[in-house]
Image (cartoon, rainbow, N blue to C red; front, top):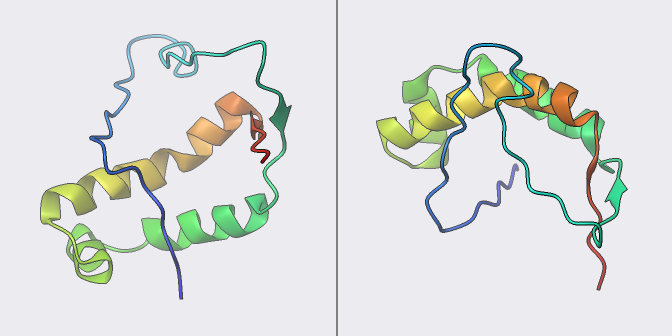
Length: 96
């Protein structure tokens, strides 16, 4: 079983502009936030590789969502490794 968590808010896609793909992404950072390496990076990589292989129709059926949302998610899966390369495997620490 796979579980995908997403915000209920609208997810705005980052549109790439001419030039370096990493520079076109606006990322806000705070000096109070420390970064760490993702704990399940290998599993996330495998999951993204698997999802890229499916058609939009299959993703829509698997996730129980519309074709439009499935299409957006397929693009996100396709950009997964580009995003990871830009961030160099660093994500904000979450502590409680």
